[in-house]
Image (cartoon, rainbow, N blue to C red; front, side, top):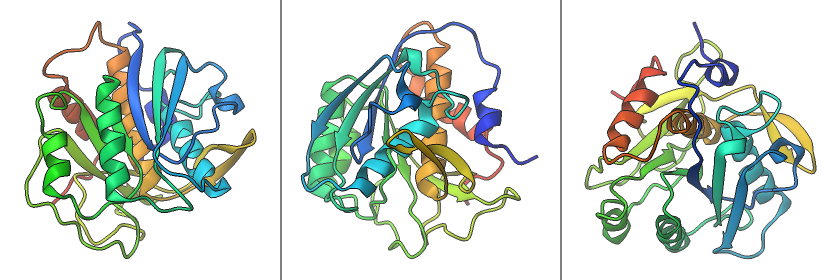
Length: 248
């Protein structure tokens, strides 16, 4: 059976609820959207300027999948703190801004970082930050990219980092996937989510497959008593258990 956002929203987990803090490195999120009326809190930090409406749509739609109200999102927004690191500027983001955004999210003591922006070159200094002692208990969830994204250059495997690809309506790898192999694949088409100005729209892309993986992480963490030292490992296991397609 092909799993959708609704299936993950209704996934049975423990009824315990604790407040979870995540980083969303993306465009600016429209925090006034009705989809986030119950959101516990959101804090923003800007690492770019020249922010366009499409950048806001991108960031807002990602959070909509993670925790939007009205059965749109997977996690419970009432127990979610969002650190919105704004790096998109007219659809583009630099590796330097990504590095600064990650450092800021680490300082905010987030548990998961969602990056629904495709990056293909991971330089040594960036991997050192992700693999550092202060970040080793944070799960980094990256989009694997769409269509003709250049093949990823990642010279060192990092245990707390996964790449997410998209499936089609039949549960197979979708046509829009990039040339790089993802670690895990989730629904990537016909995803209804918030898009800004209190509007909603069906979206597609690995952007939203990535948000599904983050939403699952949020849902799982909200059902636990407290942050644990080994939670990256069990979060990865949980995410992989919810997908029928894994990397080769």
